[in-house]
Image (cartoon, rainbow, N blue to C red; front, side):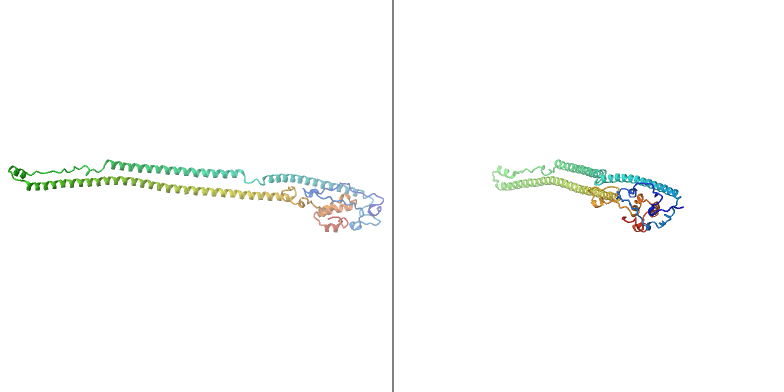
Length: 384
C-alpha cells in the first residue's frame, strides 16, 4: 500500500536526494572568459506550478510508491552518470580552450613582434645594391665612351697636325725664287769711233759726243728699269710664300676648332645620355622603394587586422598601447538563462524537478529567459 507523504516529501519515508555533484562548472562554454558566479538556488519551497505532475493529496507524489526505492536509485545513478558525462565534456572543452588560448597567445606575440618592423632589410638592401650597381654601370659606360671619344679626338688632332706639318715643310722647302735669283742688268756704255777719228784730224768731236752720251743714258735707264721690275716680282713672290704659310696656319687652326666642335657635340650627347640613364635608374629605384613601402603598409595593416581579430575573440589580453578601453578589457561573459538554470541543479532536492530540468536543458540548449520562465516560473526568478 502506498505510504502517503506530506507536502515537499516530509512523511514516513525520508526524501531521496540525488548524489551531490558539486558546483556545475560552466566556464567551458566560452573559453577564455571568467564566467560570473551564479548563486545556486537554495529554495526548497516549490509551489504546485513547478510540479504539475505531482499530486499533493493523500496519495503523495505521482509514481512514488512504497516500492519505489529502486526507481529512485535508478534515477540517482542516471543523474550521476549524466553529471560525469557533462564534467568530462566540460574538461575536454576546457583543455581545448587552453590549447587554443596558448596558440593564439603565441600568434599574438608573433604578430606584435612583426608590427613596426618596417621594410625588410633584405628588400631594402637589394634595392640599394641595384641602385649602386646601376650607377656604377652607367658611370663605367660613360667613362669608357668618353675615353673612346678622347682617343678619337687625339687621333684626329694627330692626323691634322701631321698633314699641316707636311704642308708647311713643303712650303718651306719649295720657296718660289724665280725672280729673286734672276740676274740683274748691268748698265753698259758705248764709245764713239767718229769722235776719236775727228780728234786725230784735229777736229772737235763735241757734236758726236752729245749723241754718244744720250745713247749711254738710254742704256743705263733700261738696265735700271729691268732691275726694278725684278725686285718687284721678287717681292711679290716672297709675299705669296708668306700668304701660303699664313693660310696653312689658319687652316690648321680651323681644323683643330672643327675637331673641338665635333668632340664637344659628342661629349654633350654622351652626358645627356648619362643623365637620362641615371634619371631612369632613379625612377626605377624610387618606384621599387614606393612599392616596398606600400607592401609594408599593407602588411602592417594585415597584422593589425589579425591582431584585432585575436583581441576580439577574447583569448588574448590587449596591451595598454593597443588602444583598447578599460570597458572592453574588463568585459566578462554573462551566463545565458539556460546556463543559469543548469547551475541550480546541485541544490535541487526534488528528484522529479531535477529530472525535468535536465530534460529541458538537453532539449533547449539555447532557450531564452521567457522560455525558462514559462517552464519554471519560480526557478526563473533571479535569472538575468
